[in-house]
Image (cartoon, rainbow, N blue to C red; front, side):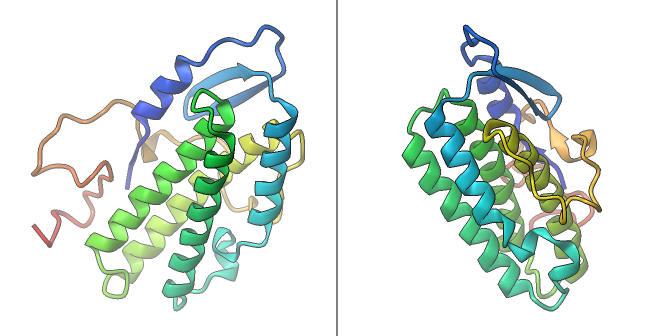
Length: 195
C-alpha cells in the first residue's frame, strides 16, 4: 500500500519562509521551517491529547477481530482533524498541512477498506492498518513539535520513526484507470474487484 502525498508535499514546499526560525518539521522526505503561533500550538496540543487515548494507534490494543471498532476510531480521528482544519482555516499553515497529510492517509485507507472488504481480507486489512498507524504516528511526532510538547511514547515503540519511502508516492502517478485506485496503490491484492 502506498499513499499519494505528492500534492501535499508540493504545497508544503511553497509555504512562505518564516522571518524568525521557530521549529523545523519533517514531512516525508522534506523539512520545513515554521513559526508556530500560540493558537496553532494550542490546537496541536489539543489534538495530541485527544489522540493519546485512541486504541487504534496501538497495535497490541487493537485485536484482529475488532475491525468495526478500528474503522470507527479512524473515522473519529478524521472528524477531529477536519474540525481542527476548519478552526485553523489558513491552508498555508504548516499545521493545516500536517493535518492534511494525516487526512490523506486516512482517506486513502478508507478507500481501500471500501474496495476490499476488510472482513473478507483480514490480513490485508491488518497490513494496511499497520501502514496507516505508522504514517499517523510519524505525523503525530511532527505535530508535537508544533505544539512544543512531547509525543506519547507508548504507541511509538514498534514503528520506525523515519519516513519510509516504500509507503509513499512522492510524484503523482500517471492517470490510468487500470493501474490506480484513487491514489492508493496495492499491487498485493490486484485490481479493484468492483470495476
